[in-house]
Length: 230
Image 1: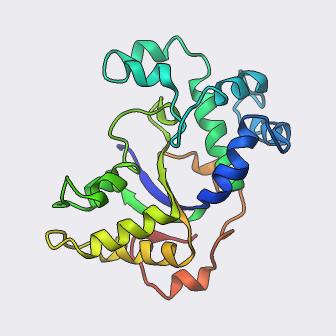
Image 2: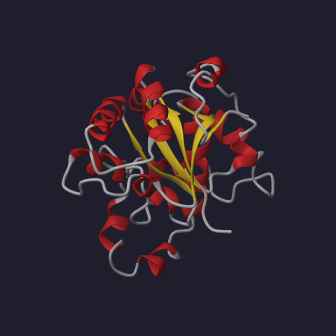
């Protein structure tokens, strides 16, 4: 069937001020999220202790939360390296669960389909800022949150959304992106960022509250063909 890529509203300000410290055990009740997450696991229990996940989250560095040992091998033999890390699946799944519980909406979402965001804008100037921004949403290389081919592929901030929108409107070689532009316009009006995912765990995420950052009427007025609001 192939992969399924989607874009979602993302509160980047809350992510950096609240969600990241939560994941690192520095504030809030991460145990409460872990307990709820365990209920989504097949066995009803997570194979990896919370303390181990928190330890790994504390090793993630930089604006994009990179796992440096992974980045060092990403262009070499990364798959054998993954086999040495017992926590990759649960780190990705738990991160996804906490983020969409805390600072992102699963519904509504923009359906990219079988290709990542960069493929929605063929003809984009590869040397421009818009290209650089949209690549942050695209799984050009496996990341620690998509180590097993599913999960969060990347995110951009509210300021990056506005810059991307302005840049795409000035690109003369890109066509048939009206839906994408409309999605970004609503997102920018809400002062929100965007988070991208591939084969997200739909059954679990649909149980979370929807429309935390927008209203259904707001999207209904836009008639965005690729938007899913159910």
